[in-house]
Amino acid sequence: MITGVRVILLTLLIFINPIIGNYFYTGRKVDTLADIETLQFVHAIWRHGDRTPAALIPTDINNTESSWGIGLGELTKKGMKQQYMLGQWIRKRYEGFLSQEYSPFEIYVRSSDYNRTLMSAQANMAGLYPPSNESQFLPGLQWNPIPIHTVPKADDIQLYDDIYCPSVTEETENVYKNDPELQKIESDNKEFLTFIGNVTGLSKGPLPIKNIWLVFDPLNAEYHHRDEHAIPSWVNKTVMKKIVELYDISSKYIYHTDILKRLKAGPLFREIMKRLNKKINGQIDSREKLFAYSAHDTSVSAILSSFGITPEVFPLYASLVLVELHKINNESIIKVFYKNVTNSDEVYEYDIEGCPSPCSYDRLLEARGKYIPKKWKVECGIIKWYQWDPATYFALLAMVGFCALFFASLIGMEYLLRWLKKKNRNVISEEYHAEGEDSQPLIDSENP
Picture 1 (spheres, rainbow, N blue to C red):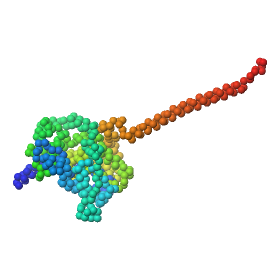
Picture 2 (picture 1 turned 90 degrees about the vertical axis):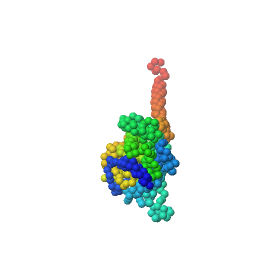
Picture 3 (picture 1 turned 90 degrees about the horizontal axis):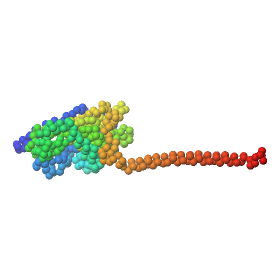
Picture 4 (picture 1 turned 60 degrees about the vertical axis):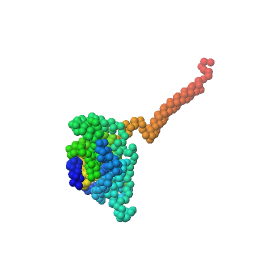
């Protein structure tokens, strides 16, 4: 018993400072309750709840896929509870704005195609829309089914981080290989990264900083489930602090350049901006109030980077970004809020880069519009400019056909005019000669 307590205390000393120390904000702490007097529409983007690790440390024989029971990358009971509580928090924030009962006209939930995000969305909706006694389909069951929509990973350019895009792959490799600041960080931490590479079995030399997540991820999961999963003996407070620090640094480079912002984060940003524009112009159902995305830490970072906001730390489990549309003084104002404390009501408002508050939709589009891709597949290098879809080909052929017909008509008119002109001259000439023959006497009377 005493040994068990010591292990728990040691674990807390190793992990709690590095992880809790990540709660660093540059935004302004604001009231939990939204200003529903001016609120028109909300986009919510959250990270899934607590999960089992997505990767394993090769040398850690105590933590294997089988030891996690439900497998890798799956939502845990702890994660379900986190999302349920987040749903309750959203209910509290938008009380009076959202209906008490679920309405398909009011809310739409979209998830990436992962078990953990789909289940997180379901748990979140259970907290957001607890059924009344009248709406319970089974007496005593505090849950009603709410639809969660998704698309296959291969088609999900908004939420699937590893979507195929050659331009992104090339740019990412270039950043992690050639960025001066990143090179210096790797050089300064070469000894530590070599130690990590060797002790984990992930690398014979220094572990590339872009792969530090392969160490952070399983250790983070072990910490959150330390009552059932032992932490490797080589991990101490100093080691864990450095791993967290390097992971936070590495994460900032995911959307480091304009190309990465445009092609990696841009599709989600484009969809959100397009929907906001439709809401402003009355092109979607006036009853629609909330569009939610159940996704990943990379999705949260993506939308923040689109607004020019760089998180100081990785988005935690059940972290949440809110993009609100307000009508203030007859102007459409955009506000961005970020909640990155899993078990707290604290939420922070952030200024949008290039668009000081109050930031209107038009000024936002002007300031950040360059991060919205126009032809994503072409810019990614998936298709060439001449490899358009059939509809585009049809339109192009129709245009070419129209132009050909137009020019053929012009040429035809030219020939017709020439023919008519020539014919007219011939008629005049014939008439002239005919008149001459009629007026000429057969015998000259003066010269018989």
